[in-house]
Image (cartoon, rainbow, N blue to C red; front, side, top):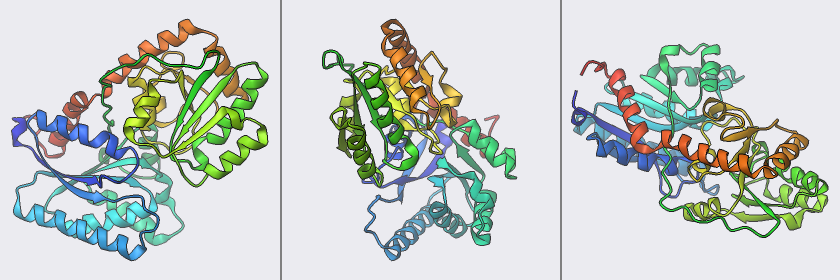
Length: 366
């Protein structure tokens, strides 16, 4: 089959939506187009404004779903690719959408993060909708083998699940790292919620100080746990070692990648494929993180990353100290990181997705 025979309708995020979707999906879709796939983009996910009322959200969902439906009725679409996540609010939206779209088109539902245990939710209606959603889709895409195993353990047929990747854009320019003499710069990038490990990162600074390691943590992002983190830094006496930058633009985040020594992300969140990790790889940053989800699939301890235990600042401090005192290892990890990042460049994963689309459409031999 020629790639030009594929016409995919994408449900994408609003430009104002925060998170990894707007970092990985546009370059991926552009790569598909460069390979000859006809792609139509329609807004499906909206911004993160907490002031938006429930009624307004419902109106947005209904309007977006109706637009998707009209496109499928007036154009010859081969497959609908919806970007979403597997959590309660998304399940309510997605189940309405796929039921409204009917059975005329196959749907591939990509989860940018998932909580499979929802399939055992106490709420009977949520359980029913979650299973109906998966049944209705031709397949679901998850970002790690850990998620796939969890879904299978909860009764989802293995044939319904595909492990897929996010795309990472190669940096256009590598700048020389700029450091304060004698001080190591650590970077933490995330929506600030308690499960992302920011509290562990701040406690680690205190321990590093006791080990005579001078480190400064740049925190990029905002969220509900920011004030608690700021209070913790003051309580531990390390407020001078942490800078809370708040939410910054993608271009500003890129600038930070070029000016720090390593990425420190001791998350205990149910991550899928955290873009901060894989973007850091492309900049050649050594990574200190936990061995979960996509990190467990693609990173090798001692090669591109050093794995630490969650909820264990002492372990984090010991491993950061050891790494910072070994510049040869840091340089080797940097080179390894850039090599691994090439596997996630848009052109490469676009070809993998095409194979998945063709398989779902029964066109393997084309």
